[in-house]
Length: 113
Image 1 (tube, one colour):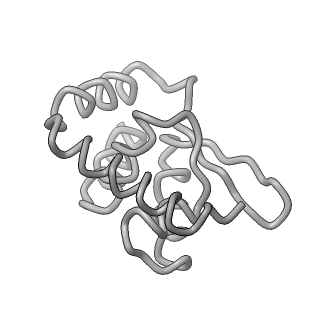
Image 2 (cartoon, helix red, strand yellow; image 1 turned 45 degrees about the vertical axis):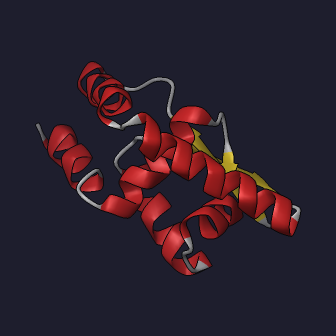
Image 3 (cartoon, one colour; image 1 turned 180 degrees about the vertical axis):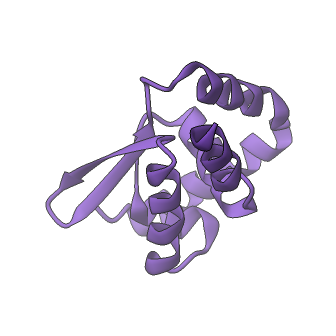
């Protein structure tokens, strides 16, 4: 039951929901991608991503000084059901807007890593 409560807490923030939405359409994103697409500071993005990580929703991979995040593939059934429900809950417009913001960030800055 604790795992489910932690999952709901992790998903109770709009920024973290945006991060999950971005990861639904991208296999893996660097912290700087979240910074650019969502207009966050690096420390705030990292803090939100750590919250998702601690809830078991995302996995990370270090590449030099950069940390890349992806949705966890081995989610327990309850978490998997919630992530699948989120995929359905986001509107196409929300997903398109986030995707556009990510593309604009990458084109304007050439990415960071």
